[in-house]
Image (cartoon, protein in one colour):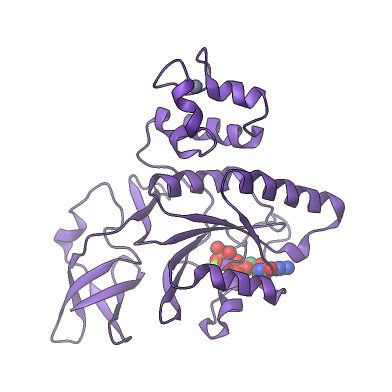
Amino acid sequence: MKGLITKATGSWYQVRLNDGTSLACRLPGKMRLNDLEVVNPVAVGDIVHITLQSDGSGIIDRVTERKNRLLRKATHGRRGIQILASNVDLVLIVQSVRDPAFKTGFIDRVLVTSEAHDIPARIVLNKTDLAKGKKDEKKLKDTEDLYSKIGYPLLRTSIFQPESVELLRSELRGKISVLTGHSGTGKSSLLNALSPELNLKTGEVSQSSNKGKHTTTYAQLLELDEHTFVVDTPGIREFGLVDFEPYEISHHFPEMKPLIERCHYSNCTHRHEPECAVLRAVEENRISESRYRSYRNIIESI
Ligand SMILES: Nc1nc2c(ncn2[C@@H]2O[C@H](COP(=O)(O)OP(=O)(O)OP(=O)(O)O)[C@@H](O)[C@H]2O)c(=O)[nH]1
Ligand SMILES: [Mg+2]
Ligand SMILES: [Zn+2]
């Protein structure tokens, strides 16, 4: 039998079968050892072959070849790579206007990863109802301009504005999308707004730290309609990049990519090298300071 992984806790896996029912499955130990680099060999979105056991549970025999994997560096002191989801059509980077305020550094890291895996990405700026006054509006507008100029149109949403939820729905239709972002940005709330029967747990944002309380604790693939699936994921603090060489990073910045061949050195890292076309573009404001700052931070972190 074949099925789709909808939940992966490490010991048990929930598999959705073709008829829409779910089956609890286990993973044999030898499969866990196959790829030592990866902390979770099977992830939500994986399509797996299973064998039915006499006790009514299933055993995962193998994972079918993946179209792609959304990867980040494992956390909690674990070495290696974590698969956030497999077979992804769209990555939604969910950030909020306030509580917590959005971070372009986070957005840029996810964008680089999505570019590298050839997965389309969309920035969702949620909680627009919390925007206060001209200052917030300007910041929103500037962010929108910055990203739309480089090919990432930004979607403004609020769970209190049904039209924005409908726009989001049309983005998701017919795809498997993954929502990622800091804790408290409203990932689960947006999904509840799209489909109240999902009844996902949501949590207040702490007043003192202005951060979410990590309400969602495991990734879950959910069905919005017959052809539309979304993965709600736990809020993450950082999106650590895996498997990049420093000189490659600029290949995944669409505004830098066309300039690279004009740099003097073919492996230029665009920091201190002479005759660097990217540095020149930053000086001439053709590349935004904020994006270049993200670029530098990423290089320094890998
Ligand atoms: N004002 C306002 N509040 C919102 C909006 N969306 C979500 N919230 C609130 O933000 C808080 C956090 O929402 P969650 O949906 O739990 O956030 P999350 O991103 O799923 O958080 P984690 O599961 O911890 O990663 C809740 O109190 C929501 O009611 C919005 O559009 N506007
Ligand atoms: Mg959540
Ligand atoms: Zn350069």
